[in-house]
Length: 330
Image: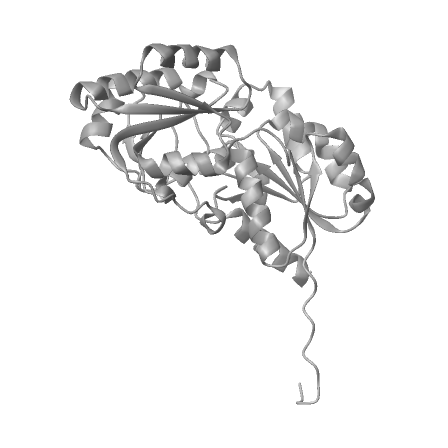
């Protein structure tokens, strides 16, 4: 190129269409795609939503579906990926299925042989599959492995700034989506009860979200009889950040998990995370068996620490950039 020649213009990035519940329930998936939107828009990449939680808002996006875009479908349930596969096979641009849930392996294991075959055929509709831990990628058929990227759904670039509250060493918190059984909120309460034998001033904040179920109401009633328990429901992000910045320990006694966004948030806020050893955990998380005594001992005395195996450091935004770069080279 001579000095008189203009540099080659770089191709414009593909607009990103996030297929997700833009105004859905509070929780890790919503936090994850909201963080991704914030990071990409800050870089000048246009981001819009096909709001899967609203037929009216989704229909308003139909005119844009005829343009080349990078389509990100955020899901926790594989049957929805199967249902939407024919539509995604026809979309112009690049399509990515983002699997957020640690239940993915269990969903596959419970499928009949014919349904697994149908799943494999359906997943070929997506150009890429992004999974939030190695276990999810490993459970999918070998024929699809080349399409899989393991990502973390948390992006520290868009995480809330830790609140300037004084840390309360003996304060604990845990999160539960609608009081669902696999979050084991009652086990967390029993764990804290045992911790109080060593730390009589220990408290527990239960961050409940999602559907306001009878199980959540039962937690509220329990808190009325135990003054060391408090229950918050659907707290906005700044209030969640305040809790995570204040407590000494964040408990994660889940029966299964993906790469939990709130675990990453708690670490970023400076809390010690004590979690069950039932799933891959981020580096630095204190691990314990899924049992109240073991979890309580890990809170008061520490324990083995995760090295982060099975999880990724690649953020969704980094995966988007890589896909955008690959598309530009084609």
